[in-house]
Image (spheres, rainbow, N blue to C red):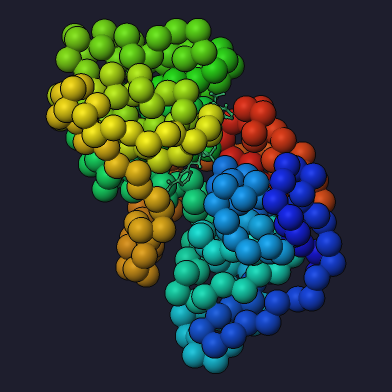
Amino acid sequence: MKAIRVNAYGGPEALSFEDVPDPVPAAGQALVRVEAAGVNFIDVYQRMGIYKNPVPFTLGQEGAGTVEAVADGVTVVKPGDRVSWTSVMGSYAQRAVVAADRLVPLPQSMTTRQGAAIMLQGMTAHYLAKSTYPLKPGDTCVVHAGAGGVGLLLTQIAKLCGAHVITTVSTPEKAALSKAAGADEVVLYTTEDFEAAAKKATGGKGVQVVYDSVGLTTYMKSFGSLAPRGLLALFGQSSGVVPPIDPAILAGKGSLFLTRPTLVHHIASNEELRQRAKDLFDWVGSGKLKLRIEHDYPLKDTAEAHKALEGRKTTGKVLLIP
Ligand code: NDP
């Protein structure tokens, strides 16, 4: 089968389109034909070696497809089932082996492309808005990169929770997309001061939570946007790695809270994985949550997909079609 391998860390040129043997499921695993694989910013970090996997490895940790075979001990899925998964390495390939308890069956109402598009970014948006800081009516939040994969979903879920949502984006085109996703206010943070906008929107008080995936270029102003005892959920670093933070900053800016959450700790149990998936699938099924899948690339063109994602050229979800 074909797969995208990383043999040495590096830029997009490190993505090697290769023939590899089909994987064989071990006990408790299923073999899945990958029909769509999700591209996520974490794949860029892993390709570059910022997050280290021993090389060589097959990249990608999100996808959807059809079960082809199951190994001993697997009863929750069977050949022919349509399934999706997240946080399982080896998804940029024509076939993948996945632990059966990490597979989520797809409802009839969802296409396989939708299944691949919603898992990683959708689960992230879900845990941020429902668990990290459970939003409620009366809250105001800031969502950075509001037209990105996580950003468009988090904006919609924050609105479902009843919050007032301020987003940041880099271009007027992205601002229009973010508005269409439900943002109450959109700030062009490349030219406007989002901290001032957040203060103005809250009558000078500041917001309850900032969901910050941009990192280096935003985190200090994110602190400044918060109300006393507000929470900075620093969940990514698309603009660069945030340096060590002096706890005195939290005191000085209003007894703030800082967390650096990751998805894996929010879907650790099968129950939590399935509960979050159920909410997301129900919202998609009822039309409350819209998926924007604008960018499809053949597997062999994965390097182009990475260049577009890193170059801020994408909005919503980027998929690879093996
Ligand atoms: P996005 O689709 O959001 O793409 C990244 C966006 O970040 C860009 O489109 C761009 O939006 C913005 N950005 C700002 N500065 C830069 C820069 N210097 N270079 C590139 N992009 C920049 O990606 P994802 O939705 O896949 O992921 C968003 C972030 O969330 C990533 O940092 C990712 O690692 C993180 N993440 C964390 C998870 C967790 O559990 N901790 C899980 C999932 C994702 P604009 O042009 O509008 O500024």
